[in-house]
Length: 95
Length: 487
Image 1: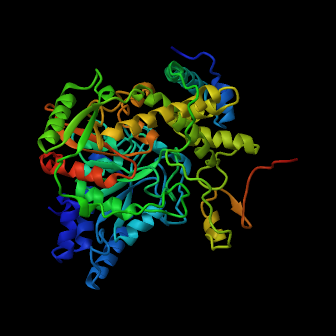
Image 2: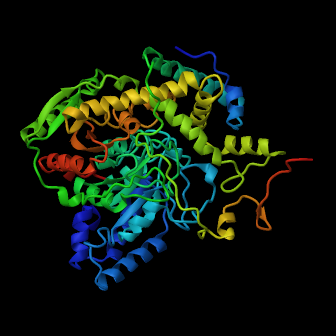
Image 3: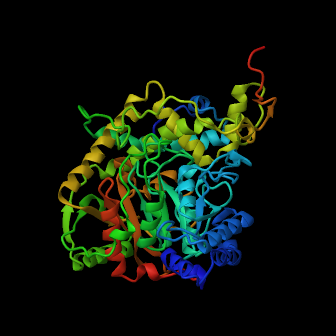
């Protein structure tokens, strides 16, 4: 039971993933099958059932709002693909 | 041979001064040189750092440090490739992290170091812990030490293979839907998934944040108890870690099963379980009965919805977590004319096929117009699955099931059918959705070829002590944990 309502190009774009035409065809078909399988959940009556985001609910976990040391700037930048003057370098965003 | 010892046997020898930590580390390195060309468990290995840590442990032992205070002092332990250890790689077996080096120690790494462990090597995994075979690693698959043509399971397949191949005394993995228990079962070691919130996730590559949990893979139950004790506990850096006291797990071992009630979930004993797995499981249940346990049939009516629920919840969470890999702050970058194309190119090139598949699925189930039908519905079914566990635990102390429906499969067998791959996690997944604890331990072997079979025990939330006691009683009454793969 495949799901034919699934637009792989549209969703890959939302996910910011460039796919080759071959990948689009293969992943699109596989995901259609998987979505067909998960439709199984429609068999269940979930009226009145609370959704569950976490198994162990802990609410309002806060820490004291105080200044603490953090990793130095050089360490934070050490893994950057491009960096200069203490900044991450990215392509131009506005003309 | 030194590398064959259990962790507890090694610490006894270290404490008695019969061997040094350096000798133990060298024994692992020699073993890796001898067999890892076949097994391919280790992705990276910093020998100088490993020997330096071992020498520091020897110095501590010479200065009077004890295993009572530091239970892992001098013990070589390998790490799944997603733990942050300062100055070391953490590739998550993905190309997208490039030559990333962790700028800090995660909490589990820090706690293991405090307990004296010699943390060495990054072991293989499915890329971003997505898979059940390590075939999704960007750096080639690992091989099952019992039959090199077969997979070691996954995603913590490198952990299980490295323990089974005796290249280390234990390994630390993560379990999101079975990723510790399934490879432990397929490689014949003990794998423990603690209760969600028991172990800090700070400094662990995040996949599905409401499901991920850190745990040990080891040679026996006692070693697993010692490792859990060293890692567990509240961490202010992980807001989902629970401030519950950590018992002395190892000290509680040694009893029998008198008065213990074990639940046999009838929905788990479906058609399609391999006959040898079923026979080994039935014998294990009888063995537990002989040790004094009462066996009760229980019903977990939403079991069949576990896999579908999981692949909505887990992929949704992963799609959000993996948004951080954008080629800006760390890892590989594939250039583009503008930030948008840079993101798309980086992620299109850097992620492997299964990771793309899951991120796209997760993005879809969260997207406008589909959220209620998929994600919200799955969260409601998750509540029903958790209730199944709560109801079962009203009458029994733990559940007993096979870990996996079949022994290790051959490499390549399921790679073109992701759904079949997902279904191999059918018995392990619900435990993560419910957030409770589980363990897999050896309960026999198939005959030809000889492949390990895993027994799964699922315990109450924060009931690791009792779970380990039950597992230990079974283990000590059976010979399976003493078997070693011939390499």
